[in-house]
Length: 484
Image (cartoon, rainbow, N blue to C red; front, side):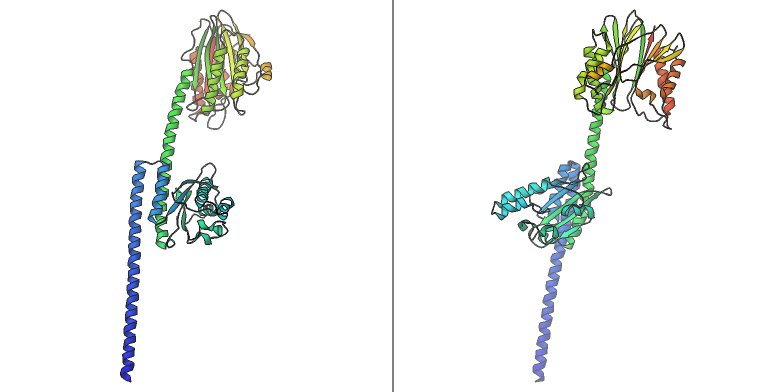
């Protein structure tokens, strides 16, 4: 009897050992498979990162980077689809930058698409519409599933989208059942720039190792995306600067190269743009054999828009000035021409006068421009030629015509007429004080005997001393007219 019990116990021990040995073998085999899977995933990750660097060197365009990142990340972690959302800097909303060939069902299915399936409609058509819905949707931070990923700023792993609260109520679970997801916020320079998501429809949900690998390559992808964006922005900035330089050169071509050589008057001018292009303008126009027109103007605004409006004014004034002895009539025509095309928040101040050979009479019309200063050599005093006049571009015709009229005055030999834009008297120093009209008067009086060119130079030098190196905030234009 004892031998039988001993044999039974021995058999049980042997069976238990075999069972434990088999379990250990299975465990070792499982660990080996997991180790091999991790090694394969790591090799894919390194290959992806290497390829990411090569792609950036070969073609750093955002579109190329978007495609490579989404498809590459999905391949590394064994996903079958992916999508990339980026934050639109203007709307601060997430917009689709790229979605893979396979559909990544990261949004609930809208009712109108679900109805197609419920009524036995074409599944391919329904999926096509669903992809279009995903592509065209823009999301606020915290809105919908993807918007919350952006707000929370961490990796989110969902083993089955159909069981997630955001998708459980969807009318078309066929798109979400059995779909696992990994999603994370892409951060560059401490700023959230988008959301990357990959999905897997078949097989086991994403593992912990998948999640770790996904987080690592998403971090590197964010750096590559940020670098690509900076590269494009830098290229765009260089292109814009080249265009501004070209616009500045064209604008300077439109300005007079030299003052007209008149027997009765000596004329000098100075023009300094605050930026590449300017809203200031001046011109000399031959009216007829005995008369010359001089114009000065300033668009309310700066940059390209202001320079274009001023080019329009120049063209219209030059077309209407010849043989027209009324400066007011010329400005009426300019206003009528530009009014339909000027923005409501813009206007143009203009001053136009006509000098006549052998005459001391000056005819002037002012449309909202700074009133000129006239130095009288006989008295040593300055006076302001103050006339009425509405700026151009505000009223289409009737009010402008009533306010802008011809004004005649005399200049004696030695008298100096100074035309200027508001950038002269509004030039500021470091304390925020303006140069002002009184300082301009003083420089005019102190330098009236120097000649028109030296007078202009003296005013420019005084403006420079006054501003003490502060950045020029507005365009500056000066014209000095001395009666011989």
